[in-house]
Length: 299
Image (cartoon, rainbow, N blue to C red; front, side, top):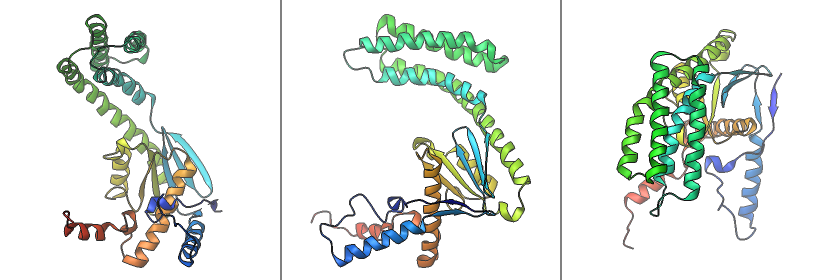
């Protein structure tokens, strides 16, 4: 059984069609190009072959599309999000106070700080319910105590100077990064337990055809944890042939649409250039480098 996902190709993703690619008039050339676009769109109907599995990371979930079935398992545990939420407290304070204007705290700023303080105290009281002990619990208590004290200082004396904000951030950084290190282990261990289970249930020849689509935001794309994990697992250099980062494509059909684009591009790149990665960069890349190397900037 094949899973058919008819789609209209996102031509802009491969750089062939951009928002400004339009003609002022209809000519035989524009009509020919319109026909090309229709053919390209039709080529983008994504067919998931039964023996070519796809794994998607969508938020907290790993999704396996294989043999016409869709399996979903939660990969990122609650402990990851608990540490993340606590770490966001000092990060949020630095963001807020760094944006205070020359006139000092506004009424809206004071309202934000007061509300954050109330929520921080409530979260601090919730800590014992997490069952954390030792260094883990002590670290969170330090974050809460320092953050609440910093809020009180701002409410009483006004916006802290930049040097004080920076010192607060530097004091919090080791605690935040310790939380980040533990969250990293939780996410990777969670993903790996699921992926290994799926791998063991899959014939080796089908596993070799696996493609991974990671749905994520723009900022964490560089050095992305999931990309690093799957690159190690599949012995790939990173994004490319078997690992695709679907930036800000939060709906599964859109992420699969990007996968279709990559597959079409790869075939075109091999046909024209004998390089399956060539269409994953601007077609004008090499020519632009050559032209700019000798460009007369004074003309």
